[in-house]
Length: 265
Length: 269
Image 1 (cartoon, each protein chain N blue to C red):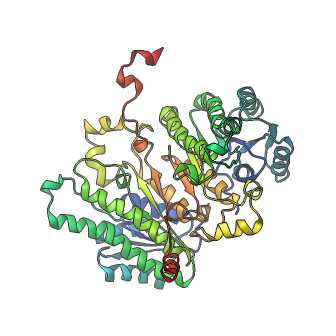
Image 2: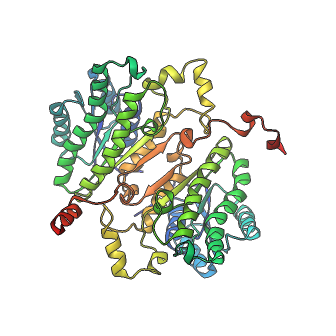
Image 3: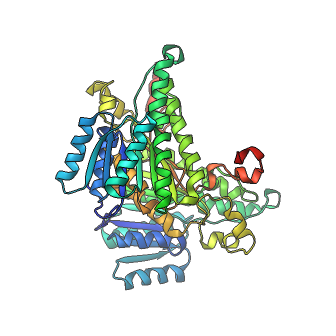
């Protein structure tokens, strides 16, 4: 498929994990890419890798919670490729700790990066897209937007906020021909969740909660992001799409676990 | 909207309600993506027209008259697709009927008919394909819920929204039970779509105004639902299961009133 030939895609948090998987998918469908990330070495390496495969890639280093950095990233994409068609925002941070022990500065940093960052990139990209009356935005929420877990309140609060931001933004942006949607990844094998996924005890144990029987891969998510950004999703806006292998469907115990005699009759 | 040739190549799809509206668009889209298609519809002629359209453009399709509320007919449908195409990988349950009336305005017979087609019909088709899909190592089932029903009740619509709410929960239950067999089950939750079903209860002008009330400013085209169905049927959705997938132009994102509405209210008071 070549749904993005001649289109320009800005990926915020595009240096690794799910962001990099998105970059690879968009590049394979013909897109020009701008990768924006806070880690200079990582984003340059990611860009170099894609360029070596013959793709057109710009890399920008900056902080998503700083408006000037975000505008610099958008401007870099526009000046290199002549416009901006798609924004993908994956950048996010997490710190696991009960709220009674949570440090105020850490809370503010998480809100700044995860929630304010989404506002800043949506505003900057949306202003450019509105000039051409069209575009698609995909931001990363999480199953934690509606599915609570211990010691994860700040992250979950920002992800819940993103879902409601997306709904409101969809209404404001529809008149400009811009669609905005979120994905809600479940547990995906990335650096952010490595401590769980690769733990010798907790890793296999947590898997029992996932009907699909495996953790997600970054590419599982990237494929959905690319769909949402494409014309295949032309009537979808303001939604969050759950991609979790069934994790949050609600069944943590099967009939067998309950040991009911009647179950096998 | 064009398809993605090759994306479903080697796959076999069954589409109930495939003779018109969203089902017809899905059958055409699956075929455009290179699946073989059994087009089932209670109206034999419409199913045959869709199958003929697929064959005329170089695809493989057969038509069959099927009442999805009859278990024997549903089982025969699955036996037929296996006999003709060797198996089944994709099931899309688009057969459905619309109904109006509150509880006091709906007689039990009318209620039973809506539940039998929309909800039990989905159950019967899923039940019939799960075994054959599992034997092939997996498959994808796409049910059709609704933006109303999956999320919110709409007034004067009790049987329809209840059936569609049931389809959403049936979808999740099927997803949980059959994930281990490699079967993904997801529901589309369409917003108002420009289909013959909607056209049968609204004038063109009413449909236009209905569309303008959506954030995106228009009704969905059946092809837009079909594109989402083809995505859910494909390996691009490999980690998506149990999802109720809204394709509704922002209808369910929007609650209540816009600033312009509020301005009107303020001026009136």
